[in-house]
Image (cartoon, rainbow, N blue to C red):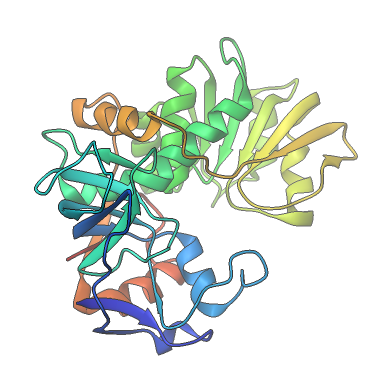
Amino acid sequence: MKALVAPSYGPLEQLVVTDVPTPVPGPREILIRVEAAALNPLDAALVVGAMRDVFPVAHPFVVGMDASGVVAAVGADVTGYAAGDPVLAHTHFHPGTLAEYTTVAEGPAVARRPAGLDPARAAALVSTALTGECVVDALGPGAGRTVLVIGATGGVGSFTVQLASRAGLRVLATARPDDAAYARALGAAEVIDHTATDTVREALRLAPQGVDAVVDLVNRDRALAGSAVAVRPAGRLVSTLTGPDEFPVGVGATYVRMAVREGRLQALAERVATGDLTVEVTATYALADAPKALAEFAAGRHTRGKVVVTV
């Protein structure tokens, strides 16, 4: 089968679409004929080796972790799926999804693709929706509270804004001027143009006592201290990256990692299919152009929604 492959740790320029063996589903595994696969920042980090101490990979390495497609075959003891079923899945990059076929264990990381949900949007929602839900869980009960979301128009940010606003939170969202209407459509009560104004200063103008929480999906480590200034005393900063446990301004930190819990992927897919939640695919590439897709994604060419490779 064809797949996007990294022969070793190294620059993205080494990526190539080439032939690799088609995976064979083992016991309780599902073989998926991939129709679409979404890109994530972790994909590039795994290729260059930036995460090798935490997530080592074997080479040749097939890139990708989110996919949508059709069940091609099932392994022994699979009871909930059969050949021909439309599905979406998170493989945790073992094996990769930027390929004609991938496998996933039967369980919470795979779900049936609802009618009306196309393969591209299905692939695009997997990690972003699951992570956004974990972020909002970390914020706690929302009614009457204000949260600043930095990085609101990206994949995780767009779901964070939607889920937080639907949970009763007042959301202040950062966005470029041409994305302001998009952020409001997601559920933002106020939009901060981070290209023309200081985000923290504007947030404090809109919430003079400080916001109850900041979700920072852009900055990491020491840079998070600047975001924490927008939070009221005893409030929290939530991040999907890394940083200190607390800040001098009396603000604690919660660092979120995506969790795949039973039934959540299915529920999120159904909410997107019915229009309760939206996912924007801002660019699509063919599998033959996957090296270019990941290079442009990693370079920041696409800052809104998700980038998908169709197979």
